[in-house]
Image 1 (cartoon, rainbow, N blue to C red):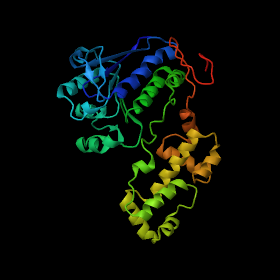
Image 2: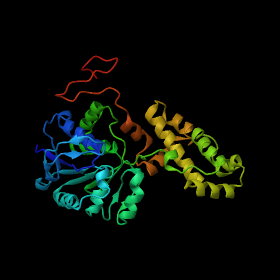
Image 3: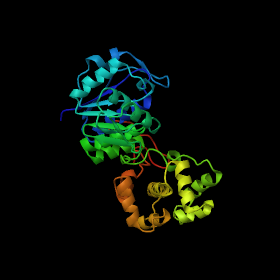
Length: 340
């Protein structure tokens, strides 16, 4: 089988984890699938010069980005160097992307793709803190601040830092199968992969805190009591406001309607219980405030893209790393070296 060539672009101000996360996934995938050499992973920088990462780490690339051949998969990481990217870097990324089968950005690497015209008319995402900036600067891009990663044709964009691992695992699963992706995920001690539609941030992070003390306290109470009566009349009574006054005040101060805020809290509660407990679907539906599994299933399909059972299957954590062939196993407390 011909190796799929993966080229990761380097530049001054790059985020080191945006580079090393996907690199480790692709580098271990061939051995995990029993196909050594399935990927040929290389890094390249302008002129082949060493680059200093945003945190100060210096990386030595494999070669010169200017003479690199178009790869199968082009990866553009994020970092401080993407805020106002070098025009020469942007032009070179555009040239390489023209011959690549897949173009991938991690975190704010989406700004480089957008500047190169590669996101025009496409749906994309980036780190949640920069989604508004990306949308303002490039109005032709449909920026979605919610998902961990987005795929639109041959172009894929991911959210911040570790989301690059999620996206790389998804690409490995597409290329080599689920078993290979699972082995790599276990070796790295991460989830097989989060579904692309999983929100980047929690509801309290995403929503504004209300200005009024009473509404702020109500936000906290809602998060702690998802199974309670969270109808507008009930919440208005707790806030000592009429339903109309409450609805207007809550939306004005938090940026979302009460109903949507409750929907998000319940979905996040259900996600957390699916990830962290062995509780059954019916029990989780009751605890999260859905009452029965069917409303929860509809909420997951609408906002996450997969039903709860599939969400749990994909996010079952790998608590014990499985060694990739050819590597030295890392002992885990309570297990014998080399076992899984």
